Length: 399
Ligand SMILES: Nc1ncnc2c1ncn2[C@@H]1O[C@H](COP(=O)(O)OP(=O)(O)OP(=O)(O)O)[C@@H](O)[C@H]1O
Ligand SMILES: [Mg+2]
Image (cartoon, rainbow, N blue to C red; front, side, top):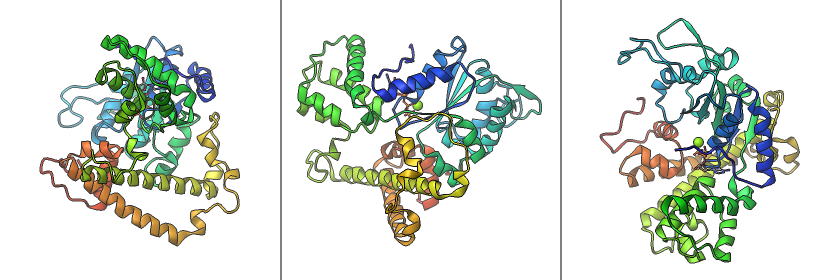
């Protein structure tokens, strides 16, 4: 399958983003791509690679959040025969395979601290050792990393090395969420309609003006991926039919956000509870992020750090001191209240996790997906809240 390298979009933010990407494509500067889930981080990374002089070499995507922490290091740096039980042959790692090409490190915020030390050295000198070897290997891989996590929070919580963070974001490209680039919604929809008409051999009759209006107003929590999936479902399940608001709303993932949750007779009570809990979980994450941003603003250590060379306007504005004028309700002015809120949010978060695990039959993978967090984050939270697993086949937490 040919992978997408074309970034569809005419909104000013996307045009500017493409320009910046083209500007850095032909350099070897590491790039950090920041954006919500499904906003197109991998598409942007592939676009940079395709427009660089490395285009005819490999582009190797590695999802740091999906590979168990114990084997990530040998996957990235390779290993020698006998380096650990099961290492029957020596093997090249992704950095070696990406030599002269590009390595795309997705969910970089999930990289374990031990691996970060080794990675920082690769960033600085291109040099590393395979696991179980003392011989240095060199890789000329261009590094592009991506995250949908708040990295300031990860740094403040000491889950991510500060030196590595600042080295990585020498160029930071922020992809705006789809809801901040409305004018691209119908353009993208149109492209996906064409793609899926061809793929499924269906003729699509189009959207009513009211349905198009709803698409423009919907917040797209899953961003472009959600839009793409919606178009495919509409074409296939509605058999190319003219789409009215009634049909469209049936297929929107978060239609509950705009309709009454409690009185929706089509949902079981349990499911409603789960939706409420996962919204609370999201809210808790957002509160935590806002708190970290405020701390970042007020903390003298951060203020002395170099600013990134390139930043798109938009979400970066939140870090600028002008935004915290008098009257802004900082955590410092309300510490007790804040602790109280965080405690209740902790309780709610714990309940949300327990509820999700229960309704997913104890499967951590499914529970993580339903809560919109990575499996590793879920593991961490289960561990820190001391939640007991009811699934006898679930692996131990420190595996
Ligand atoms: N600007 C765009 N033009 C065309 N297709 C896009 C665009 N942005 C995203 N897509 C499509 O949306 C889907 C999600 O994009 P992608 O995988 O790059 O998102 P992501 O930010 O890496 O998501 P995640 O955080 O979940 O890893 C893909 O199918 C991709 O092809
Ligand atoms: Mg991705």
